[in-house]
Amino acid sequence: MEISQLYQYFTSCSALSTDTRKIMPNSIFFALKGDNFDANTFASEALNMGARYVVIDNPAYKTGDRMLLVENTLEALQQLAQHHRRQLGLPVIALTGSNGKTTTKELVNAVLSKKYSTKATVGNLNNHIGVPLTLLSFTTETEIGIVEMGANHQKEIEMLCELAEPNFGYITNFGKAHLEGFGGYDGVIKGKSELYTYLETHTKTAFVNLDDEIQDKKTEALSRFTFATNSYDGNVRIDDVDANPMVRLIYNDLHIQSHLIGIYNASNISAAIAIGNYFKVADSEIKAAIENYIPTNNRSQLTEKNGNKIILDAYNANPSSMMAALTNFVQLDEEPKIAILGDMFELGTESLAEHKKLVQYLAGEEGVKVIFVGNDFYANKIKNSHLHFFKTYEDLKNNASVLQTDKKALILIKGSRGMALERVLDII
Image 1 (tube, rainbow, N blue to C red):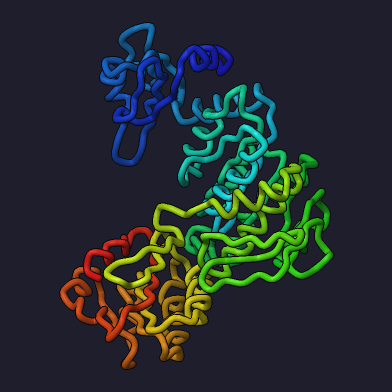
Image 2 (image 1 turned 90 degrees about the vertical axis):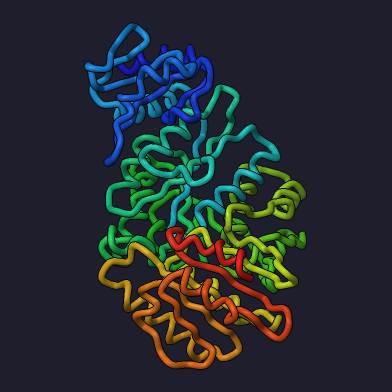
């Protein structure tokens, strides 16, 4: 089936789904396949649940005209998304990076929505399926699209750019995330920079943080809009950045107080300010958007339990984001302090060494009680009065008394998603 024909079916429907549990009336359902499932087998069920059309790639399941047969459902979804993006022709901003993608995306959306009708990636649907779904959520009323792009190997960002065809792009940073898939830190830089390559090839614009030497150097040949801290070198200047624990800064003589914890979030806020400036959002509206944004989903959230202040940052972790969070945490004024840290995943052959670096760093921070959870941290266990090691969450749960202090504490909880360290809230 030609994409133009499939597009007619798509535009006649009011929703799109790839999950039978989320089918809405008058929707079009794409029967995708994975390692352990084949949604072609749910084609008839999807129709019975209210789908108007079902896109399949196995002729054995075609039982009528409402079953739309394509060669490959995933490729059809991606091609449909690209076609839809071209039909709308709206400006699209692509965001990627090792850390802070989702937070930056939410901040940029908050700022731009003060002036424009925007659509942004929902949650972290930022892969080869999520990006097409984001593009297909754009409507004729959407004035700016904001697309988060995630990757864990080479050529993935390149492919996502070919689908989204961004007019603008921003890379938050280059950190030690997904080292296994990228083949080391140099591979991370190369993989993320595929966004820069696309922007340069297609004469589009990069937003650049001049405080980051890698960003600055890699975008010298691009059309770019820049920002910098305490410097007039950029198009936008940010001053007096501080965090204790919430980030605050000054932009165009406006004092902005955020709800984001950690100095490492300052660059995410600054990027949103710069992008808002580029799109001519009023300074007062930029300030309001930043100050009204409250993080969710275990990302730099400040919460409380039994009188303890808790920095809940348990959505994900890698060596770069972990060190940034810890460097900020140890500098905070409040005492006592407890850091509860879970293993960092997808580091490949560098995993044990990266976990060891954190253990060694924290061994010297005697003002912080540290609770390590996970096999890789445990493999680097050392004898130290303020460091405590547990292989699993269950081990920690059975020894929860280690979390007790003489007075209420400031607690940081951070680890990779697979560690699900938000469970620690149950035993504090």
